[in-house]
Length: 312
Image 1 (cartoon, one colour):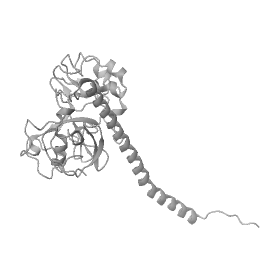
Image 2 (image 1 turned 120 degrees about the horizontal axis):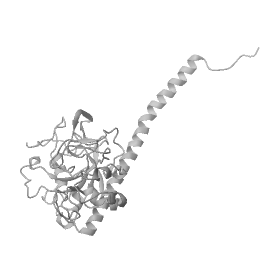
Image 3 (image 1 turned 60 degrees about the vertical axis):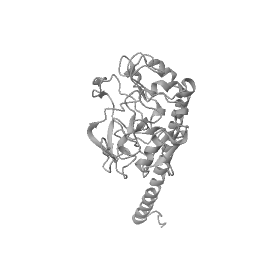
Protein backbone atom coordinates (compact mmCIF):
# COMPACT_ATOMS: atom_id res chain seq x y z
CA UNK A 1 0.00 0.00 0.00
CA UNK A 2 1.19 3.54 -0.86
CA UNK A 3 1.33 6.00 1.99
CA UNK A 4 -0.37 9.39 1.50
CA UNK A 5 1.89 12.43 1.80
CA UNK A 6 0.72 15.76 3.29
CA UNK A 7 1.05 18.21 6.15
CA UNK A 8 0.43 17.23 9.68
CA UNK A 9 -1.66 19.54 11.86
CA UNK A 10 1.45 20.66 13.74
CA UNK A 11 3.28 21.52 10.50
CA UNK A 12 0.26 23.49 9.29
CA UNK A 13 0.09 25.46 12.53
CA UNK A 14 3.81 26.23 12.29
CA UNK A 15 3.40 27.55 8.74
CA UNK A 16 0.45 29.72 9.79
CA UNK A 17 2.46 31.10 12.70
CA UNK A 18 5.44 31.91 10.45
CA UNK A 19 3.16 33.68 7.93
CA UNK A 20 1.53 35.68 10.74
CA UNK A 21 4.94 36.74 12.03
CA UNK A 22 6.05 37.81 8.55
CA UNK A 23 2.85 39.81 8.04
CA UNK A 24 3.38 41.46 11.43
CA UNK A 25 6.90 42.44 10.42
CA UNK A 26 5.83 43.65 7.00
CA UNK A 27 2.78 45.70 8.00
CA UNK A 28 4.68 48.54 9.75
CA UNK A 29 6.96 48.84 6.73
CA UNK A 30 3.95 49.07 4.40
CA UNK A 31 2.32 51.68 6.63
CA UNK A 32 5.56 53.66 6.71
CA UNK A 33 5.76 53.65 2.91
CA UNK A 34 2.13 54.74 2.66
CA UNK A 35 2.65 57.61 5.10
CA UNK A 36 5.81 58.68 3.26
CA UNK A 37 3.83 58.82 0.01
CA UNK A 38 1.00 60.73 1.71
CA UNK A 39 3.43 63.24 3.19
CA UNK A 40 5.00 63.80 -0.24
CA UNK A 41 1.54 64.35 -1.75
CA UNK A 42 0.79 66.82 1.05
CA UNK A 43 4.00 68.68 0.25
CA UNK A 44 3.06 68.73 -3.42
CA UNK A 45 -0.33 70.23 -2.54
CA UNK A 46 1.41 73.04 -0.66
CA UNK A 47 3.77 73.61 -3.57
CA UNK A 48 0.77 73.99 -5.88
CA UNK A 49 -0.81 76.46 -3.47
CA UNK A 50 2.48 78.33 -3.31
CA UNK A 51 2.46 78.65 -7.11
CA UNK A 52 -1.12 79.90 -6.88
CA UNK A 53 -0.18 82.59 -4.35
CA UNK A 54 2.75 83.69 -6.48
CA UNK A 55 0.52 83.66 -9.56
CA UNK A 56 -1.82 86.07 -7.78
CA UNK A 57 1.18 88.18 -6.74
CA UNK A 58 2.41 88.23 -10.32
CA UNK A 59 -0.82 89.87 -11.47
CA UNK A 60 -1.66 92.11 -8.51
CA UNK A 61 1.87 92.70 -7.12
CA UNK A 62 0.73 91.66 -3.63
CA UNK A 63 -0.13 88.37 -1.98
CA UNK A 64 -3.85 87.84 -1.41
CA UNK A 65 -5.18 88.80 1.99
CA UNK A 66 -5.89 85.85 4.24
CA UNK A 67 -9.47 87.05 4.16
CA UNK A 68 -11.28 90.20 3.10
CA UNK A 69 -13.90 92.07 5.10
CA UNK A 70 -13.65 95.32 3.11
CA UNK A 71 -13.23 96.19 -0.55
CA UNK A 72 -9.77 95.48 -1.86
CA UNK A 73 -7.69 93.67 -4.46
CA UNK A 74 -9.85 90.95 -6.01
CA UNK A 75 -12.78 91.95 -3.79
CA UNK A 76 -14.24 95.18 -5.17
CA UNK A 77 -17.64 94.49 -3.57
CA UNK A 78 -16.22 94.44 -0.05
CA UNK A 79 -17.59 91.00 0.82
CA UNK A 80 -16.27 88.38 3.22
CA UNK A 81 -14.09 86.29 0.92
CA UNK A 82 -11.00 84.17 1.62
CA UNK A 83 -7.75 83.68 -0.26
CA UNK A 84 -8.74 80.34 -1.79
CA UNK A 85 -11.64 81.55 -3.99
CA UNK A 86 -9.35 84.33 -5.26
CA UNK A 87 -6.63 81.89 -6.31
CA UNK A 88 -8.76 79.07 -7.80
CA UNK A 89 -7.68 79.79 -11.42
CA UNK A 90 -4.05 79.22 -10.47
CA UNK A 91 -4.76 75.61 -9.46
CA UNK A 92 -6.74 74.91 -12.63
CA UNK A 93 -10.13 75.50 -11.01
CA UNK A 94 -11.41 78.26 -13.29
CA UNK A 95 -14.82 76.60 -13.67
CA UNK A 96 -15.27 76.43 -9.92
CA UNK A 97 -14.39 80.10 -9.56
CA UNK A 98 -17.08 80.92 -12.13
CA UNK A 99 -19.61 79.20 -9.85
CA UNK A 100 -18.50 81.36 -6.93
CA UNK A 101 -20.31 84.72 -6.77
CA UNK A 102 -17.98 87.43 -5.49
CA UNK A 103 -20.85 89.90 -5.18
CA UNK A 104 -22.00 87.91 -2.12
CA UNK A 105 -20.38 86.86 1.14
CA UNK A 106 -19.05 83.29 1.10
CA UNK A 107 -22.09 81.97 2.98
CA UNK A 108 -24.74 83.75 0.84
CA UNK A 109 -26.73 82.95 -2.29
CA UNK A 110 -25.31 79.89 -4.09
CA UNK A 111 -21.77 80.20 -2.67
CA UNK A 112 -22.36 77.42 -0.09
CA UNK A 113 -23.19 75.09 -2.98
CA UNK A 114 -19.94 76.01 -4.74
CA UNK A 115 -18.17 75.54 -1.41
CA UNK A 116 -19.36 71.93 -1.37
CA UNK A 117 -17.29 71.03 -4.43
CA UNK A 118 -14.21 69.05 -3.26
CA UNK A 119 -10.80 70.34 -4.35
CA UNK A 120 -8.11 67.67 -4.04
CA UNK A 121 -5.31 70.23 -3.71
CA UNK A 122 -6.80 71.46 -0.42
CA UNK A 123 -6.82 68.03 1.24
CA UNK A 124 -3.98 66.19 3.00
CA UNK A 125 -4.19 62.44 2.22
CA UNK A 126 -2.95 61.54 5.73
CA UNK A 127 -6.16 62.81 7.33
CA UNK A 128 -8.52 59.98 8.21
CA UNK A 129 -12.22 60.15 8.93
CA UNK A 130 -13.90 63.55 8.89
CA UNK A 131 -17.21 64.94 10.05
CA UNK A 132 -19.68 66.10 7.42
CA UNK A 133 -20.00 69.88 7.80
CA UNK A 134 -23.70 70.46 7.21
CA UNK A 135 -24.20 73.27 9.74
CA UNK A 136 -22.31 75.96 11.60
CA UNK A 137 -22.91 78.09 14.67
CA UNK A 138 -23.20 81.84 14.21
CA UNK A 139 -19.99 83.82 13.83
CA UNK A 140 -21.09 87.42 13.22
CA UNK A 141 -21.77 88.74 10.72
CA UNK A 142 -22.38 85.20 9.46
CA UNK A 143 -25.56 83.76 11.01
CA UNK A 144 -26.02 80.19 12.15
CA UNK A 145 -26.15 78.08 9.01
CA UNK A 146 -27.55 74.86 7.63
CA UNK A 147 -25.74 74.23 4.37
CA UNK A 148 -27.46 72.78 1.27
CA UNK A 149 -24.58 70.31 0.80
CA UNK A 150 -21.70 69.37 3.12
CA UNK A 151 -18.87 71.88 2.84
CA UNK A 152 -15.71 70.56 1.20
CA UNK A 153 -12.73 70.62 3.57
CA UNK A 154 -9.28 72.17 3.60
CA UNK A 155 -6.26 71.09 5.65
CA UNK A 156 -4.08 74.11 4.78
CA UNK A 157 -4.45 77.61 6.11
CA UNK A 158 -2.83 81.04 6.00
CA UNK A 159 -1.07 81.98 9.20
CA UNK A 160 -1.70 85.65 9.85
CA UNK A 161 0.85 86.44 12.54
CA UNK A 162 1.91 85.86 16.13
CA UNK A 163 0.00 86.74 19.27
CA UNK A 164 1.99 89.21 21.36
CA UNK A 165 1.80 86.80 24.30
CA UNK A 166 4.17 84.34 22.55
CA UNK A 167 7.12 86.62 23.33
CA UNK A 168 6.01 89.96 24.80
CA UNK A 169 9.60 91.24 24.83
CA UNK A 170 9.70 91.20 21.02
CA UNK A 171 6.24 91.35 19.51
CA UNK A 172 3.94 94.33 19.26
CA UNK A 173 1.01 95.13 17.00
CA UNK A 174 3.53 96.85 14.73
CA UNK A 175 5.70 93.81 13.98
CA UNK A 176 3.75 90.64 14.71
CA UNK A 177 2.15 90.11 11.29
CA UNK A 178 2.99 87.65 8.53
CA UNK A 179 2.59 88.34 4.81
CA UNK A 180 -1.09 87.31 4.66
CA UNK A 181 -3.55 88.66 7.19
CA UNK A 182 -7.02 90.18 7.18
CA UNK A 183 -7.37 92.88 4.49
CA UNK A 184 -3.59 92.85 3.88
CA UNK A 185 -1.74 94.13 0.81
CA UNK A 186 1.79 92.80 1.28
CA UNK A 187 4.25 92.45 -1.58
CA UNK A 188 7.43 90.39 -1.65
CA UNK A 189 9.43 93.54 -0.97
CA UNK A 190 7.47 93.96 2.25
CA UNK A 191 8.88 90.71 3.67
CA UNK A 192 12.05 92.19 5.13
CA UNK A 193 12.85 89.13 7.28
CA UNK A 194 13.39 87.17 4.06
CA UNK A 195 11.02 85.12 1.94
CA UNK A 196 12.94 81.89 2.67
CA UNK A 197 12.30 82.26 6.42
CA UNK A 198 8.74 83.62 6.44
CA UNK A 199 5.73 81.30 6.43
CA UNK A 200 2.61 81.77 4.33
CA UNK A 201 0.64 78.54 4.85
CA UNK A 202 0.66 75.77 7.46
CA UNK A 203 -1.20 72.54 7.97
CA UNK A 204 -4.23 72.78 10.21
CA UNK A 205 -5.96 69.50 9.49
CA UNK A 206 -9.47 68.14 10.02
CA UNK A 207 -11.21 71.33 11.15
CA UNK A 208 -13.90 72.09 12.23
CA UNK A 209 -13.59 68.83 14.15
CA UNK A 210 -11.64 69.66 17.33
CA UNK A 211 -8.57 67.54 18.13
CA UNK A 212 -6.17 67.56 21.04
CA UNK A 213 -3.12 65.28 20.99
CA UNK A 214 -4.58 62.92 18.36
CA UNK A 215 -7.87 62.62 20.21
CA UNK A 216 -11.15 64.11 19.03
CA UNK A 217 -12.98 66.21 21.58
CA UNK A 218 -16.55 64.84 21.36
CA UNK A 219 -19.47 67.14 20.60
CA UNK A 220 -17.21 70.21 20.24
CA UNK A 221 -16.41 71.93 16.96
CA UNK A 222 -14.36 74.93 15.95
CA UNK A 223 -16.35 77.89 14.61
CA UNK A 224 -13.63 78.54 12.03
CA UNK A 225 -12.16 76.46 9.24
CA UNK A 226 -15.59 75.24 8.16
CA UNK A 227 -14.32 74.48 4.65
CA UNK A 228 -12.16 75.85 1.85
CA UNK A 229 -14.49 78.79 1.21
CA UNK A 230 -14.55 79.98 4.83
CA UNK A 231 -12.87 83.40 5.00
CA UNK A 232 -12.52 83.20 8.79
CA UNK A 233 -10.31 80.11 8.79
CA UNK A 234 -6.90 81.87 8.93
CA UNK A 235 -5.43 82.34 12.40
CA UNK A 236 -2.52 83.75 14.39
CA UNK A 237 -0.09 81.60 16.37
CA UNK A 238 -0.49 81.25 20.16
CA UNK A 239 1.46 78.14 21.10
CA UNK A 240 -0.16 75.42 23.23
CA UNK A 241 0.43 73.59 26.47
CA UNK A 242 1.01 69.84 26.69
CA UNK A 243 -2.74 69.18 26.93
CA UNK A 244 -3.43 71.04 23.69
CA UNK A 245 -4.85 74.23 25.22
CA UNK A 246 -3.66 77.36 23.35
CA UNK A 247 -2.11 80.18 25.40
CA UNK A 248 -4.77 82.74 24.56
CA UNK A 249 -4.45 86.01 26.45
CA UNK A 250 -1.66 84.79 28.72
CA UNK A 251 2.11 84.66 28.18
CA UNK A 252 3.31 81.44 26.57
CA UNK A 253 6.25 79.81 28.38
CA UNK A 254 9.50 78.86 26.68
CA UNK A 255 8.39 75.21 26.45
CA UNK A 256 5.08 75.95 24.69
CA UNK A 257 4.31 73.50 21.89
CA UNK A 258 4.51 74.88 18.38
CA UNK A 259 2.39 72.27 16.56
CA UNK A 260 0.38 69.04 16.75
CA UNK A 261 -0.99 69.77 20.23
CA UNK A 262 -4.37 70.93 18.89
CA UNK A 263 -6.00 71.99 15.64
CA UNK A 264 -7.91 74.73 17.46
CA UNK A 265 -6.43 77.37 15.14
CA UNK A 266 -2.89 76.11 15.69
CA UNK A 267 -0.58 74.19 13.29
CA UNK A 268 -1.62 70.54 13.23
CA UNK A 269 -1.03 67.57 10.95
CA UNK A 270 -1.53 63.80 10.82
CA UNK A 271 2.09 63.10 9.89
CA UNK A 272 3.12 61.98 13.35
CA UNK A 273 6.11 64.10 14.27
CA UNK A 274 5.76 67.41 12.49
CA UNK A 275 3.97 69.57 9.94
CA UNK A 276 4.46 70.62 6.34
CA UNK A 277 4.65 74.38 5.81
CA UNK A 278 4.94 76.75 2.84
CA UNK A 279 7.43 79.61 2.86
CA UNK A 280 7.01 82.90 1.02
CA UNK A 281 9.68 82.03 -1.55
CA UNK A 282 7.57 79.02 -2.58
CA UNK A 283 9.56 76.21 -0.98
CA UNK A 284 7.90 73.60 1.24
CA UNK A 285 9.51 72.09 4.30
CA UNK A 286 8.63 69.56 6.97
CA UNK A 287 9.17 71.06 10.43
CA UNK A 288 9.67 68.79 13.43
CA UNK A 289 7.13 69.20 16.19
CA UNK A 290 9.96 69.64 18.70
CA UNK A 291 10.66 73.06 17.18
CA UNK A 292 10.43 75.65 20.00
CA UNK A 293 7.37 77.88 19.85
CA UNK A 294 9.49 81.04 19.80
CA UNK A 295 11.48 79.76 16.83
CA UNK A 296 8.25 78.93 15.03
CA UNK A 297 6.94 82.42 15.83
CA UNK A 298 10.05 83.94 14.27
CA UNK A 299 9.24 82.04 11.05
CA UNK A 300 5.73 83.47 11.03
CA UNK A 301 6.52 87.19 11.22
CA UNK A 302 7.69 88.97 8.09
CA UNK A 303 9.35 92.09 9.57
CA UNK A 304 10.20 91.59 13.26
CA UNK A 305 13.94 91.26 12.70
CA UNK A 306 14.46 88.03 14.66
CA UNK A 307 17.65 86.02 14.13
CA UNK A 308 16.84 82.41 13.29
CA UNK A 309 19.84 80.16 13.86
CA UNK A 310 18.38 76.65 13.50
CA UNK A 311 15.04 75.26 12.36
CA UNK A 312 15.98 71.57 12.14
